[in-house]
Length: 140
Image 1 (cartoon, rainbow, N blue to C red):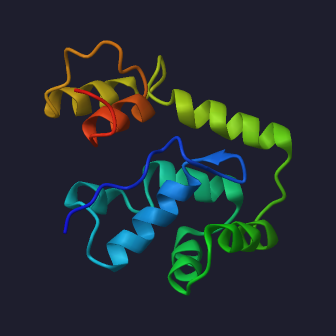
Image 2: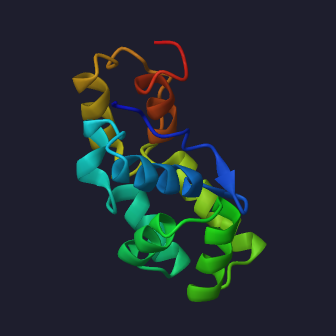
């Protein structure tokens, strides 16, 4: 079964994208993750988030597949990685939610939109906006 991951806007510990990363890890392990997401496992947002948290993606994957709740995995990240302040969370969320909007990632976002038949959607300014539409959580 090919499933899309949960929304990039979902939060855990106040952080965007962390629940999505955990969801992708679990779905991939069960052979349920849509094939379009396979090449990006541990890359892109997943990789940047792990770097930001101070944990290796391989370690996060192993911990996630060992079981436990998202909150338990977040606690593990906090123990293994760096301590985040409220300002750190604000910085991550600002970066992640605006990725693709007037930055070096804009050409890639525009290509993805075109490849998905969404080039006409000038309202999709960020990767998060694009994911919501492309993955079926928002109207095309």
